[in-house]
Length: 285
Image (cartoon, rainbow, N blue to C red):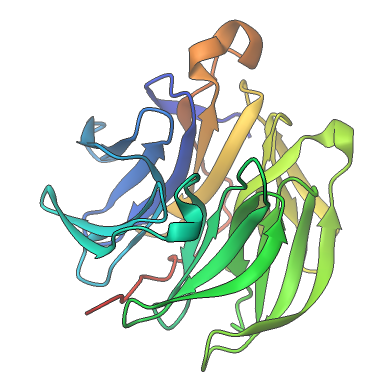
């Protein structure tokens, strides 16, 4: 179960790994330097494909474009190197940025924001027509999300509270309700960050300052823990033709003496556990 280091840019805040099913390549970001990277597992080639305004998270549109969630609440489509704006800014988010995001089964996008100095973060839902609705307020740090295989429930992480929640989810309208705690992470265990859900409905949660990813059974019991040579493990996703490869991003590459020799690198594992494709967004199509 030793992770394989596949790309090493020594990123300060490596985040949001996401498999592009059309290109058969992995994309991920560095929030601090406002860059997006791409990795081809067949050739081993990797490259920086974007540098510009800060991107906190992104989804892949059904037409293959990337939907970027950025600073000041901006949301833009990136395709063939060109940016097209959907939302220029959100007045209430001018002092912050988007963080983790996820497309739902219908192509909407749940998108969370970071807190500001004077208020907590929020969770929004971007509708198919490009309109935005605030779903949750009072969030410490909006983070990883995922859906159960039956598409009836949604997981949601508040990093500041060290909790992953489970909501009832209505696919017909995107509404979430009946919030309850799925797991609580103790202070010495790190902070829950990005996450994904595998084919069997098990939850994979990355641990910022915990140096690991943790797999939870649907009942919330820990099933597996994998350590990394990096304290700040930021997110996890499945990829490859059969979705058997697990890709993990890390942070702290600018402070490796404190954060570990693999800090800021992209890692891969194959444990014989199969994931599922993440849903694709369908905004303004």
